[in-house]
Image 1: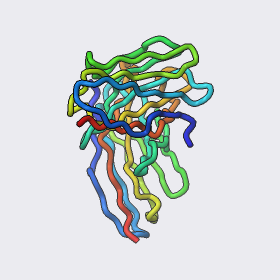
Image 2: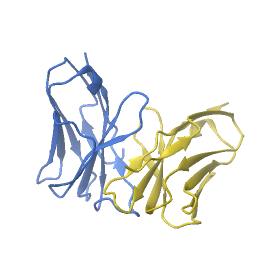
Image 3: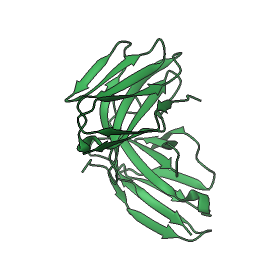
Length: 112
Length: 115
């Protein structure tokens, strides 16, 4: 069973700070990784779809990188804003799986 | 609004009872997935359907069952409910069965409380 880990579990930053967090997964048989943003009382929303080693994706102030050889992805937020407060989930798919396995998430709180 | 509709939003029921959760996928999506999120746990995959057929099964209890109907909506049936079944149940949909390039569209979830 694919094991997806995320760190840290939670994070508090001040408005304007840049921050990053990690998603770790087994590097063997990697197929795809997706990042989701989940605001309280809403549904998770897809942020990035990443499949190739070295992939870098960007959406506004949020970007992500992927290293499939060492089994990790970083999510970066530049100049955090209170509206960035959410739980950030990564989900991985291996060559054998027919469903994405989600990590436990990193809960980000941006303080004004 | 993501386009995935889940009903009801909240449900409170007693132990031993049976409930049905309903999901209508986003228009055009053929695959439906059910996930459970219990307290302090990540999203746990339960089951997947594609165009009416069961495609993959995760850690779904025998007391739970699901189906996808010809109009592509799906229902998750939970029976002989226990306190530990209290959780947020999410439905997600996608155009094709799980694939590397297609993210899921999630509904807003059904919060089930068993008392």
